[in-house]
Length: 184
Image 1 (tube, rainbow, N blue to C red):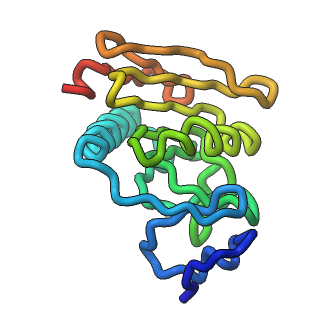
Image 2 (tube, rainbow, N blue to C red):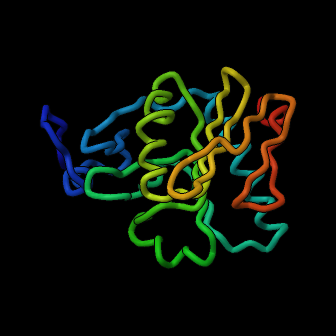
């Protein structure tokens, strides 16, 4: 087991030596620890995952839906744990190994006071760099959500929805998140 000491750079090999379930992510070669999410964060996460799962079942979609904690290895210095991720059925066998290796098609992050900086900056940059096609950021405090879509390797804000609107996924065509119900 790896004990976290002051070290300039950590790698995927170091990360894999951590105890299973350790509250860390490897972000730009730095081990970043976060406390467990607040109840509001988890309530939103469960609601979202349930709605997406129901949608996938109704559509007969055989893509892979996973919730945190689930390691996603992007490179030797970045192993992230998105709150929710989705991989299309066509890409499932390419990415599903002992963990997810490569960019999911869709990532959803729910902001918390302890993680907002990473989700809005560093993780967003990593998702963009490695080709996550759709990145949704849910903000429980502002009661809104942003959907970033990848075009020519760069994210653009495709949709911003407030608590009275529905955010419509591009990857999951026909799926929308009614924010009033999500934040109830």
